[in-house]
View 1: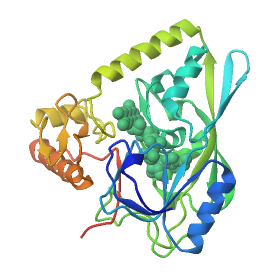
View 2 (view 1 turned 180 degrees about the vertical axis):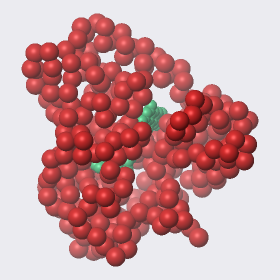
View 3 (view 1 turned 90 degrees about the vertical axis):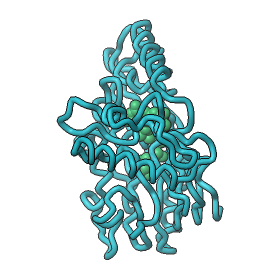
View 4 (view 1 turned 30 degrees about the horizontal axis):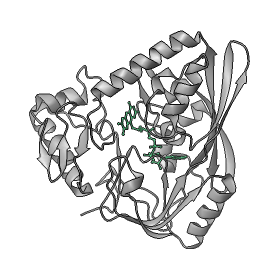
Length: 319
Ligand SMILES: Cc1cc2nc3c(=O)[nH]c(=O)nc-3n(C[C@H](O)[C@H](O)[C@H](O)COP(=O)(O)OP(=O)(O)OC[C@H]3O[C@@H](n4cnc5c(N)ncnc54)[C@H](O)[C@@H]3O)c2cc1C
């Protein structure tokens, strides 16, 4: 499909067209799509639930591949359980189903937006848990080969993994490489000839047997807390990472800087949670980008802290 507008595929509801767009639910469909783009030297953007991406108004000049394989199976090993799942499975709903059956270790993810693949890619986490703490291994398609990776292979840190630094795991190099130049480290801008992305196909998580009632209680409390803290409107969750080694969260810094309620176009820094930037309806990516810049510069000026992005910006690098 050509010139597919991406806004409906992102939780921010912004983003211009993909030059080419396709969906895949099997490994062979993923393979076919990647080969097709390689033959045309097109860059590829992999899309899960679109809940951690800011796609620019210019769109994506390449192939957007949306991975939608959804399945799961649980192997009961007594006190532990091995949960096998396809990477396109929505994690928040699955966590609820598994927890209600008396399996613990994934409660933190109850109600978390996005897919399993996106969560593994960025080491999603909240309420004391993270993917790093539950993942045992995953299967990835890398340069046409399916590879099995143990959790250690992902070199997880706070909202980071080796997959966010493609040059560190890909065996093949292109002259241009992948990603934005150093002048704009926030922006992902794969170019023709860039290495293909690694596609997480499926994964295995380790769960622990626990009383179903108590797991449900925990999940209900998490979901209620999430609901209370989450501002109404289209967003991508927290925009900035919490500064390393600081007792103060990014949201607190933005709040103390007096930024709550600041608007550019139809984008607003939420009144309820300053680390959420909302599309109030009809916002452009550019409104959000300018708000991000404003927020970052204000915090830097007032507190001397350079906030890092938790979300990923996709689009052309500007001078
Ligand atoms: C209201 C709200 C609340 C949120 N709360 C939290 C929170 O508490 N904690 C938290 O950590 N995050 C939170 N998020 C962010 C988001 O839920 C997570 O980052 C999520 O894991 C992203 O998954 P996704 O499928 O949407 O990824 P996408 O946004 O589609 O993609 C994100 C990145 O992952 C890559 N990717 C996606 N699928 C695959 C795959 N199969 N193989 C390889 N790479 C892949 C993409 O290429 C992209 O680089 C929140 C978001 C929203 C909207």
